[in-house]
Length: 284
Image 1: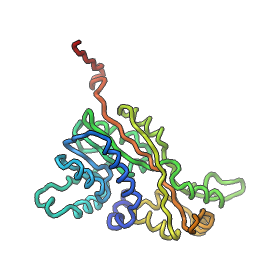
Image 2: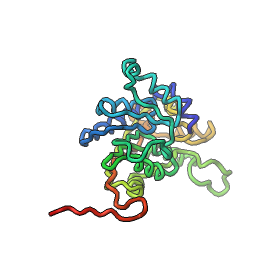
Image 3: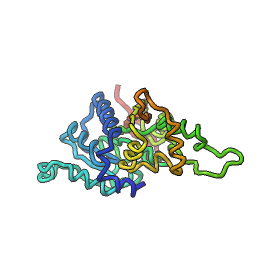
Image 4: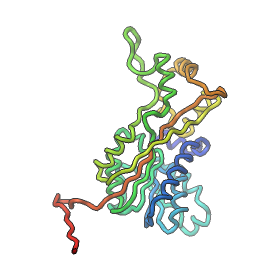
């Protein structure tokens, strides 16, 4: 997907309605948190809406914009105000994979990630790496797609026989529609396995509507996720799927996205690197 995201840098903002809405809801959750981080990072920053929000909230913090698609970082740099660039107060740009961050351990006060972690086949290594780079008392705040995302697509594909295993006598076809995503309980278990303490998870549904299938597919192509999200089918099969797609009262195509929100703190370690347990004694 790296190439798809890189190519989408120029068109991403024109279609990033969902990401902006999810980012706004993530920001609302930060209103409930008391935090004064020295360094903040937007992991999978795309064109930079998240890091700009973090700069607004934490103006004294050093901002890091992290993405593995280099052209996205170019878009972040281009969007920084001239005054920030002249004074070198814009986001520091870091071309890196979340599973191998070139950051020191215990160096971040806040790690933010908006709609990126679900693209990983296994988010657990990413959670472990985020735990490593967060300082004790640091916060991970993220949003990811959940399993009911594009339920309309799976329903329509099932109706026309284009999803799931082949029936007896049918030719083999790609198991192609709608990527399956982890639910919030699985993600919560991974956070605990990675060392985070008492993660808080919740879920919301957001539904976008489109006048035509072409508009829906174009948006996902502009975001660089069309193939990863929708899968691969023949054009004939796609026509059948969209004919079976339910319409709303205005004749538009609804597309539902399950958004899993999570935040978790890095607790004090219970053991040191050589395996010995950490015990604290407090005077009475």
